[in-house]
Image 1: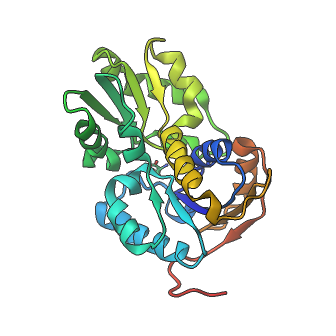
Image 2 (image 1 turned 60 degrees about the horizontal axis):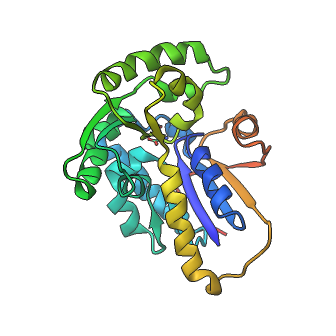
Image 3 (image 1 turned 90 degrees about the vertical axis):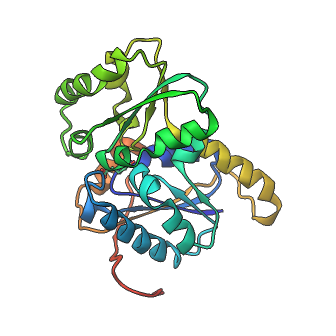
Amino acid sequence: MRLGLFDSGVGGFTVLKKVIEICPNNSFIYLADTARLPYGVKKTSEIIKIAEEIASWFGCQNIDAFLIACNTTNAIALDVIKKNLNVPVFDLIGSAASTIQESRVGVLATPSTVKTKAYTNAILEFKPKTFVIEQPCPEFVPMIEMDNINFDKIADVASRYLQPLVREEIHSLILGCSHYPLITPVLTEILPSSVKLIDPADSLSLRLKSFMDSKASNFLKKKNLVDLKFYVTSNQKNFPNKAKHWLNVFPEVNLVSLQKKGCVS
Ligand code: DGL
């Protein structure tokens, strides 16, 4: 299958990695909207416009399914993406919420995601008595996107963000921004060992796998083949290095404009 996924930057790598692990024999088109990073402090209207442009660009990429590898867009514009794409859409928030077992849950996410309460609402739909506390983390994404990441500084900020959640004695913590699994070692160092970390990419990958299994006969099965194509929206010289660092691939990266209307071959 040809799968499309996007994020503002490197966050979606965490989703790509999980999906490749669970559904390996596929081709992937990864779009990083680097020109507009970070998404997590943008207004709703901006995210909706971005979602429309991204859906319209992927509409020209001949994909079989689309994965929203960005929680902020997922929280604000899932319906916009679904309306503008005529392929199955897999999302992080709905996938993760349906698997929550714990009764006290923390969520770390961008300020724009937290404002929507999308995680709380989705979890309560499945388990109405769950206690959910959401923590906005505005400083994480810019720090994770830096060329030289300062993990000590991230640890300081993380202690501050995690304090109210630990005080509430959460049993599990959802990494509600796809960038955050990249700093899992920092978070586990601070959290009590009883707190279970939940990466929504796990449940998204499993949903995708069962969809693929049900459709398997309709698609050509290739063995052990992962085909990756990367696109960015601003000239990011360091993007291949970032892909090397987080994914262990050094890809050719293509620059695209999402503002161009219509499909160009
Ligand atoms: N990684 C994205 C998310 O899951 C976007 C973060 C950002 O650009 O602020 O929310």
